[in-house]
Image 1 (spheres, each protein chain N blue to C red):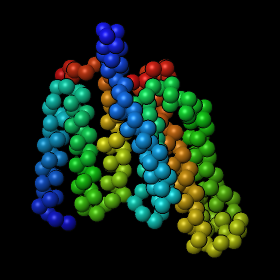
Image 2 (image 1 turned 135 degrees about the vertical axis):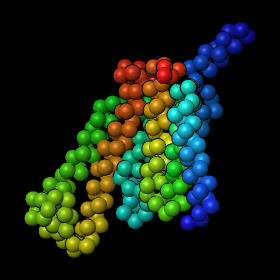
Image 3 (image 1 turned 120 degrees about the vertical axis):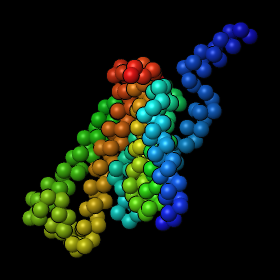
Image 4 (image 1 turned 180 degrees about the vertical axis):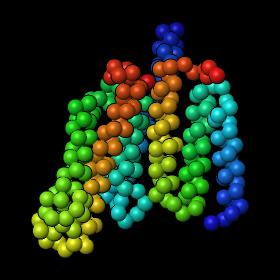
Length: 160
Length: 81
């Protein structure tokens, strides 16, 4: 009985509770879905790449707060995270550079009309979507790695 | 825009800002700063800038509070000045 009590006390010291873990486990898929919705609908409604990226990153922050750092790193390793961040920056810069290569200005999406003929108006809408996907990926990666580095003091073992 | 609601939220924002500066405990200051961010988000949504309000709600009230708490847990909780 005393052992059980001690275990409960140490668990409370670490800050893990069943209620928080269950709530986070139920909440995280919906947060990620909402983040994807915000990124995809960024050019129609409030929101966009940055806000959706922060939502996606905060889902990993919630997992890191409720569980251990190791659980989060098993779901999304540091290497994958860095890959996503660099891929986002590459998409943003690549779309801009492609526009410049095909004869427009940097990030002038209507120049991409020679690649797939959709018409300049459609390309202006679609180009914003492409760029916002890149921004969302980069911001998600940076938000998650900011919390991982700050929460574990750069060690990547325990977390908060 | 309802100016009475504007004035009420603005008054609460000023109270939260003064409290966040004056409180000695840094954890309390962080929580009050989160309240300040959320009230700012309400104010912006009420004035029609939904995009800015969205950013404030996610970054200001959500992520930055967590990052501040993470920084406090690895340093000292009491303010020196």
